[in-house]
Amino acid sequence: MKLEHLLLGILLVRPRTGYELARYMDMEGVFMRPRTQMSQVYRSLSQMAERGWVTFTVSTRPGAHDAKIYETTPLGREVFMKWLTTPFEPTVESVNYEFRARLFFSGFLDEEAVIELLTIEIDSRKRQIAKYRFRDRTIEAAPDSGFDVDLATTIEDFEHETGAAAMDTMVDRLMQMRDMIRERQRELQPVSHAVGS
Image (tube, rainbow, N blue to C red):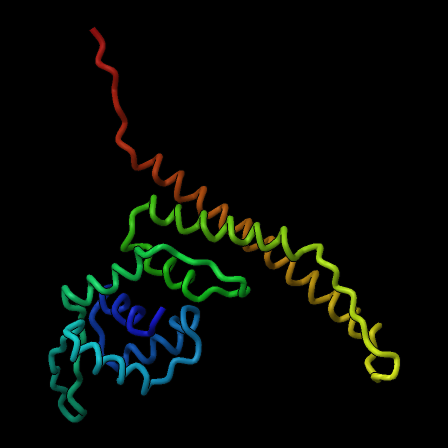
C-alpha cells in the first residue's frame, strides 16, 4: 500500500487542501500509515497531479495564502479502486496497516467484499495462533554470558500472555464485525411475499 492510495481514498470521501490531508494523516491516518510527514503528502499530491490522478482548484483567502483544494479524478478513482479490490495479503505483524486502511475505505465496497476481507484476516490470524501460541519459548544462554535467563523468561512470559490475549480479542472482535455485517445484509434484503390464491 502506498501513501498515494490512502490520499486518493481520503479525497474520494471529500475534497481537501494539502494542509487538511497532512493534518488528517497526522491524526486519523496514523492508524493506516504511521509517521507520514507533511512534505510526503505534498510531494505525493504533486506527483498524483502530474499523473492525472488528482486535480485542484485554487481558493482565494483574503489575508492568507491561497489554498489548493484537491479532488480525485476518474483515473485516480480507478487507481484507488484497483488497489482496494486487489486480493488482500495478511501479514504476521500485530498491526496490519493495510488491513486497517481497507476497513476504513469499506464504504466503497459492498458487504460481500468486506466479509471476504474480514474472513481472510480472521483465518490468517487463527493460523498464526495455531503456529505460534504453543511454540517452545525456552531461552538458552551460555553460563558465562551474564544474561539473566530467569528475568528474561519472566518478561517473555508476560509479553507472550499479553500478546495472546490481544490476538484473541482482535479475532473475536473481527468475527463480531463480520456477524454484524451479515446481520445488516439480512435486514437490508427485500422481503418476498408469497402470493396466495
